[in-house]
Structures are given as C-alpha cells and as structure tokens.
Image (cartoon, rainbow, N blue to C red; front, top):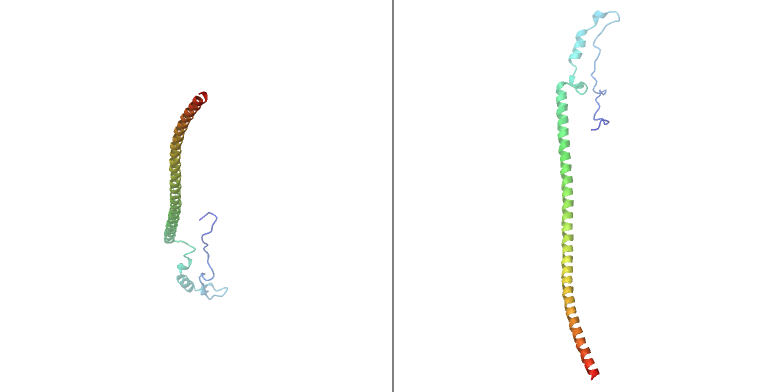
Length: 153
C-alpha cells in the first residue's frame, strides 16, 4: 500500500452508537432526586465491543499485526507465484529461441557442407580441365609440328 492510499476508515455509524437513555427524574432545583444508580446501570450495560474498532486494545494491536503479517505473507506468496510464472515464461521463450537457433544452425551447417562438397567437386573438375588443356596443347603442338613438316616438304 502506498502512503497516499487509504486502507480503511474507522468511524461510528448511527447504528453503532450506544443508546444512553436518561434514567433520571429531577426537577431543575432538586439535585437529590437524581438517580445515579440507574445511570450506572446504563453504563454497566455498555457493550465495549461496539467500540472495538475505534479504541484499539493491546489485543487488537496483536490481531492487527497478525492480520498485517498474514496479508503480507499472502502478498509475498502471490508475488513469488507471479515471479515464478514470469521466470517460467521467460525460460520457455528462451528455450524456443534455442530450438530455433539450433535449427537455423543445422540448416547453415548443411549449406556450408553442400558448398564445400560443390567447391571440392569444382576443384577436381578444374584439375581435370587443366590436364585436358595440357593434353590439348601438346596435341596442338604436335599437329603444328606435323603441319610445318608437311608444308616444308
């Protein structure tokens, strides 16, 4: 709870007010007829539980502290549950990224392997073509030499 929030307001509503009835009968000048016993009877019937919300007793403070401790414990449990849920969600997201990147990595490795095979094949083909070129050049030289011999003769 923030400092500017109101958690509760304790007040006496008209239904909570004790009813003190006037149990005296006296005239303006006759103070001796004031019946203190009836007034004390009205105080003895006063139910202190009606003011339990307004005037906290030491027992009330411990109950309030226990209630606050219980609320805080429940709040902490809920917060921990939400934190575990967030961690679980993050873990699942990261795990799906791991799987995705493993798949991408596998595809890239396959492409690299295919390119290396193709490169190896091209290198062998180049070697064959060079050998063939050398053979053709030798054959051309032989033909040129024969042509020169035939044309001179």
